[in-house]
Image (tube, rainbow, N blue to C red):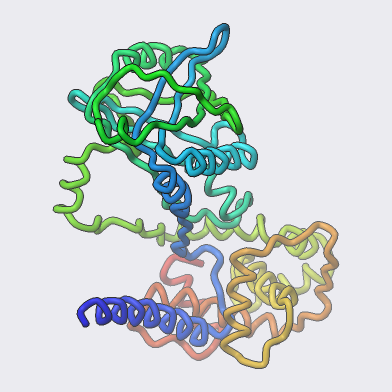
Length: 379
């Protein structure tokens, strides 16, 4: 009964968060400020760990190829499972290059810690795309294996890894179950499998724990236990910068990245000049007019017109966070009336004011909202 209650509580919490986000969208009614920070996060899956577990991954082997770079072998009791894990690693490098794989070895007492993970930046590009609009936080997963002994050859590998150019082959091989159960470090002759072998540009070997960089994945068991006792990091996820200068910089970057054609037409045509002039009569800054026009234009990129207001606003929010306007797209500013522009500017100002002053009543008129934004230093 307790387990069911826990799952239900977790589901309820997620549902409540989704409901709150939906309520915000409806309250904003299509208003949006491209500079206000939003926390977005993407996370790698656990597929590598699943495949290594299926392969009975239990140790590492090291060796040298005549007239070639050394190799590192991931040993497991199920060779089919180990080959599956290696094929996944090969797929990472095919998609993002040899730097996609990050392997770290940290000496710890008589043994060492091995960590296999993906390079964070390359992983971010694969799962969220290569663009300058969104900059999501990246949750990297890592397969960590602790070995209780350390073969002397690892010290040679550590010296080799310090060279400016130190490539290394990554392969897999089968380890008899009786040897896997025995534990310890020993010399063992095996036949490596070179199918899908990956040539890595190098690996990181830390002979002292204090040599590890802050972002290392090679953590000791004691460090993990200490992290559990400390509990969740209260500074995670980090809050975005909400000061006026940061909001302005983010807004300029995102608008220029997402709606470059609209901004170009707006700034270089007579109709664009007329819309800008009308905004100035309301007391607007130039960016408020440009943002409002981009927001009005973004509604034209919905895949279809949903009958539900909530669905429409959800789709519109997704478009503004993901859409990249092509240079070939047609921009017709004559379809935007002065009344529509003024109404959108009011919605956008209300969006910002709700977040700057959540407990204050928002002015009814667009002019009043514009004035309040300026009074707060965000105009």
